[in-house]
Image 1 (cartoon, rainbow, N blue to C red):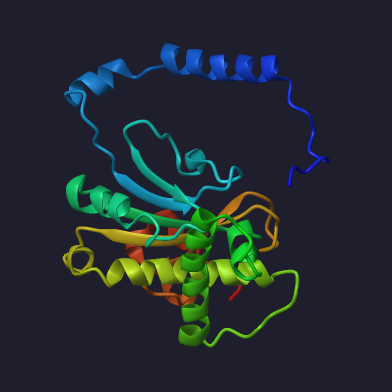
Image 2 (spheres, one colour):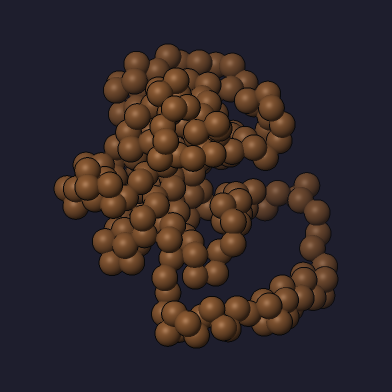
Length: 231
């Protein structure tokens, strides 16, 4: 059903914005750096993030030839396993970021009755739901009904994706050999962490969830200062 409350979009204005974006990319294209890399891709980050439009990839800095981005609803490893593994095992990025966010719509949808959704959506939401159900058992998550419910579930959802990554023998070996660092983060779009809108917090490193330990992890650099979680 179409939501009639949505504002109408002026098609000409929309196209103008797209062309302006294209023109900006063309004028700022980093040709010299691209040429130095023999016109190939050399990312240093594999990013698994939610496809929510409020979660732009540039949260983590410049994108071009730096971030190999994989996006899907609910930032699920198993929904895009091949893409993520390509970044880690073929492009050999030394950093893997799993990014969740507050009040994730995919988390809320997976916690609801989604039987009437199209099959493609049901398939992806079923994967999200399985992650959440497993997290509840693994981390003894209570059925919180507060305003923070979906943010708390988003945190343990990130934890689950890190677990799935570490369950892959090749990925686990890279982590063991210190050739790969996996960071789980939460982006606070709603000031649920009480320190301002749009802030990013470190909640998991290579499967370690204890923020008391993360704060002193030398591998994290400045990200150690951002160690904080609600769950």
